[in-house]
Image (cartoon, rainbow, N blue to C red; front, side, top):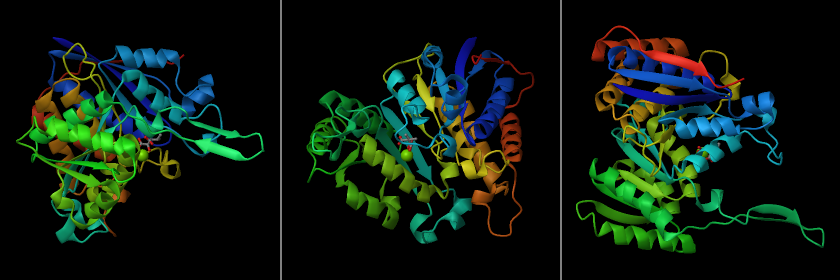
Length: 383
Ligand code: IPM
Ligand code: MG
């Protein structure tokens, strides 16, 4: 019997709603996997934690994440905590967790579901069949390197500096993970950089080219990030796996949501070197759509990215491949059957509520895996 410990951090806006649906799907999985026990512990992060505790993430929450086998995360932020100069900001929760867990590789798959091709602003013949996996470096580069400051000099002029810095090993571990993932897919890897301008990019290209020699079965191609931003929309089918640094990856993966049709369909997995007790990755899983404060609490948010993130959690952290695939199939079926939240529905089509989509996917998982009683225990670390 395996005992899986999962930290559930819903956060703000639609975060808790979509994470709730992912938990529903996990409960369906648990009901069919009676040899396993799933222990879920919930806590507040982001704006919710600022309101309750005055900090975006408590030390106890970081400790909870560290002793968990995996973390399921919703989203953080919102108009209430919007001041970018405030000392305490919701984003500190996610940035702090990424750093604390050392999850250097952020996997962001973008796949065009055949039934959703109408969602894309791109022509069907261009986007149909698009299936791209981004690997974004997540714990170094422009987001974390020092100095990073905003100050007034002696003459009273405001100045600001961010630093982009990488070491060979930071690049190598990320690129290596990308090559390995490319091996399990269509065996094509692009590294996106700005080597015509940036020294860090020359390091990325050099390290990637060196590692490529060990992966002769993978077709390797460096590409300039600006050119990639264009080619991704003109010729998405040419791309399989794309590895890039933290900042470029942030920008390109929002663009890649166009290939999936909606931000509500973009899951992510953040993996590091650390293994959990089940020899899976100790990972952090989050939908990339953010908190969508305009639709929060109305029951219309799309839970699919969170549910797909749960599937990635089952695969990469818990080693439950069959269950992960069952969840992904159930998601595809729900979309095919027309159970769609407003963001992915056709004009005039009847739309489904967040919880209806979660219920349907959970039921499909049960059908797919077969089973009865549940073995999920829940507790709360808050308060
Ligand atoms: C993302 C988000 C975050 C990032 C924000 C919330 C700090 O945009 O996960 O892509 O920039 O990494
Ligand atoms: Mg982003």
